[in-house]
Picture 1 (cartoon, rainbow, N blue to C red):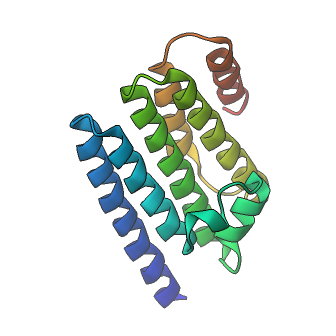
Picture 2: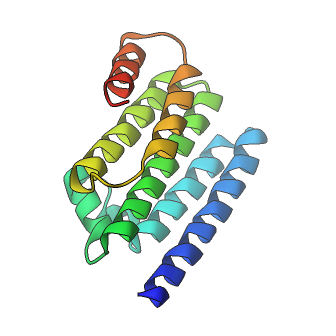
Amino acid sequence: MPQRQDYLLRMIEELGRFVAQATKYRQAGHHDAALLEILRAQERLFARPAQEFTGRTLEDQVRLLTVGEPGANAIEKCAAYAGLIVEAGVIYQAAGQPALALGAGRFALQIVDLARQRHPDGDFTPARARIAALVAALPDSEMKAQIAAELSRQD
């Protein structure tokens, strides 16, 4: 078990490096390159190429992400996945695409909700806070109000 935890910690650190690079690209206005870094991080998290998990249902994606993982690792991986999606939303926001940013916020919230259903003892408070911050920074819309209401109901 400790070896598995070490692996997960190393992977989380590696994901952080991808996000740091994506942040540098975003801040420089290179939004496509930033999104590519997020995709690379997702491939690392899923341990497979993007074509093997994109286009699948959320349930299938979470199953692929957590297959064979003990509860604590599954929770960490789901939280990391939601965090990567929020980072994509921040990039979309910076690129002037608020609808895509909101979509990313909604998708991240769906990941958290599904993970909470499967792992009710998991602490997803940091992921939910990041989603709330992303959504709060976006222009008012019906979708923003819906996401905010969903976040409020779960507090």
